[in-house]
Length: 142
Image 1 (cartoon, rainbow, N blue to C red):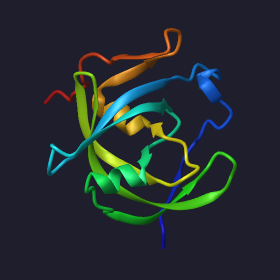
Image 2: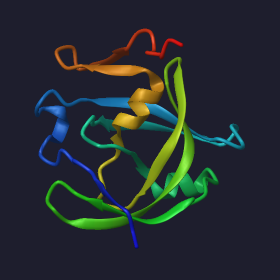
Image 3: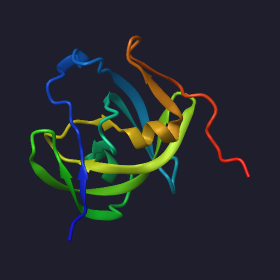
Image 4: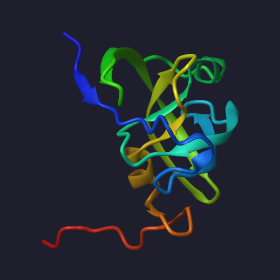
């Protein structure tokens, strides 16, 4: 049975003009062979999306494997879709993290999701429409 994960997709924000949305540029790398990489020049920063969505063709070209198959996602319009997920390194300027990425199909939005932003230790500045460092990471005291 497929796991259901909610995905909030901002579908009416063409050009980044709605609700403080904006786009970023990132680099995707194969976590095993870092020489295999691709630049995504325009990806929507979407804190409502748990996952980062990258074109399946790009991930396949980089040799990124489909590790989790047929995960169920619910789109903002209520449509349920299934997609595969793999592992990749995501870079934005000097920041980088490894995360699960969705193999986006034709018609899917390219999204930089909340999990990736947490891994990058970046937060959204909605007024400036940019990503900024989150500051020191919280840790438990023993």
